[in-house]
Image (cartoon, rainbow, N blue to C red; front, side, top):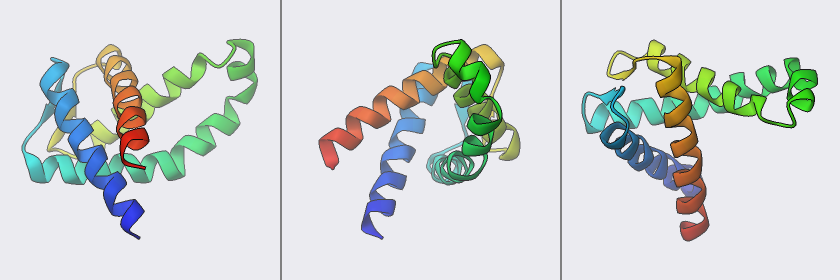
Length: 112
C-alpha cells in the first residue's frame, strides 16, 4: 500500500516537472497534478496493456518504437479526460511522455 502511495507522489512530482519544462503541458495546480497522476496511473494500468496487445505486430515491426506512440496516446487521453491537466498536441504528448518515462524511471530507482 505504501508503495502505491509513493509511486503516486513520484508521479505527481514528475507531472509537475513536465508541466514546468514542456511548453504545451499545463497543470492547474498541485491538486490537479495529484488527480492527473492518478488518472495517468489508472490509464497505464488498464488501457495501455490493451493497446500494447492490439498493436503487438506493429510494435514488433518497428522494433518497439511504437510503444512511444502508445505512451503518447495514453498521455494525451489523460489530458483530455481531466480539465485541470491539458496537453496541446500529439507532439507535445510524445515529448512529455518520454520525459515522464525517464524521470519516473530515475526516481523509482532512487526511491525503491
